[in-house]
Amino acid sequence: MASGSEQTVSGYIVHHLTNLTYGKLPAGFERGHGDIVGPQGEWTLAHGADEAAAMGFNAIHVDSMFWSLSLGLIFCWLFRKVAKQASAETPSGLVNFIEMVVEFVDGTVRDTFHGRNPVIAPLALTIFVWVFLMNFMDLVPVDVIPSALALLGVPYQKVVPSTDPNITMGLAIGVFVLMVYYSIKVKGFGFVRELTLVPFNHPAFIPLNFTIEFVGFLAKPFSLGLRLFGNMYAGEMVFILIAVVFGAGVMWMLPAALLQIGWAIFHILVITLQAFIFMVLTIVYLSMAHEDH
Image (cartoon, rainbow, N blue to C red):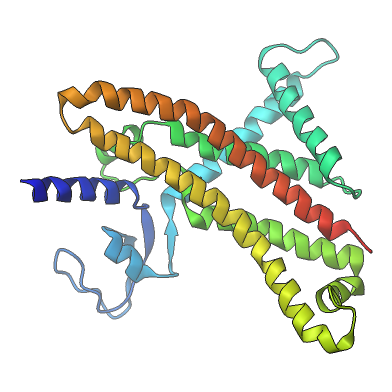
């Protein structure tokens, strides 16, 4: 009985941590219902973690892409709507709140970024609001959307894009590309000097300097993406474990409800802080790319 319960709980957790994956199964792969994939492979939705793993690089997390793009469109629509309503009069309601967010981000950029680039402030605003909206999906009860979509035949659904390392690392790689671009644009050959003659300004130490600086340079996007993923994944796991407690019996309903409310209140701080940290680190890294010594 205990073993069956553990298996059920394990299956519940694995199900909620599995993405809705679309990709190409390799030729000869045996699916769960006994079918063998033909010699040309097969493009299909994965039914289980084993099929998703077999797809390898030829796969996309449909749920992560859908929710991240949808939240990005909501951000664009909302801010465009507020921009059209803005006037010289004293703002109120939503307009006042959005103006506070814009002023907060603008002040952070002014305090942190030491170069001159009109792209940085809009980029910082986009990152902060977009990451916050993706993180905010963590406050949606874990069973609501997956259960509703299961009635429509959708087997898996992860609604928090920032719990998917593909999304967080995608954002981080985008920032990394901008770092490289502005480092070359602003510093020119000086960027090569930074990688080869720092910290030891002598030709004999070029290999050592390059190794140290190059590893440090590559560590920035990894730390940026994995920090966000790790914190949000851990928060989502806690919500899933609390949901498991709800199924332990009637006497556990009240403690589970109190745990969920408490963790949700605390998590509001976490999701905001993670969006802020991602934005600030982006500004700092791009500021470093603009510093031409």
